[in-house]
Amino acid sequence: MRLVVQRVSEAAVAVPAESYESRIGNGLLVLAAFIDEDTEEDLLWTARKLVAMRIFDDAEGVMNLSVQDVGGEIMIVSQFTLYASTVKGNRPSYIKAAKPDVAVPLYEKFIRMVEQLHGKPVGRGIFGADMKVSLLNDGPVTIVLDSKLKF
Image (cartoon, rainbow, N blue to C red; front, side, top):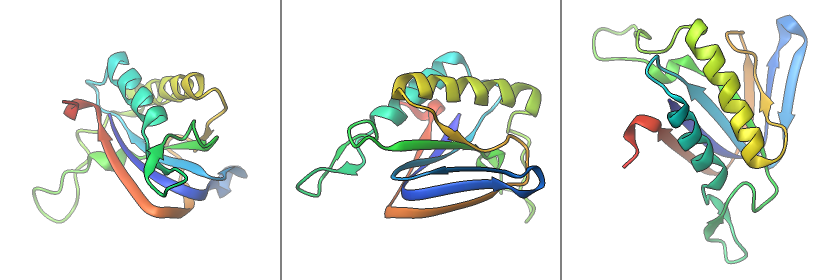
């Protein structure tokens, strides 16, 4: 599984066709993608890392605090294009990204894990929908986590 984690002052996702909107304030906007080989271990490792990652400033301006430490919020949006392959030609291939029958259960389970670890509800998009995502990146701080690249 692959995440792009952005520290934000605020973020929102809207699905106009479904009159849906989700918003968060200070916290993390997370774009998440899955592959067929992802396991519960991948989800749990990534969820723990996400909630505990120290990327918020302490009183001295040093990134020493986690989203939990600052009482921040989390929003998770599905983003299969994180597994785009651009090796051949000019049109990206998404063949490595999990299809919805695999990805949706992984996405839902990951959100539940993060909610349990974080102790509060997680904002979300609608899997597979045409979403409009807006954010005010804080820093900017943007980090990529990949469960297959943990050392």
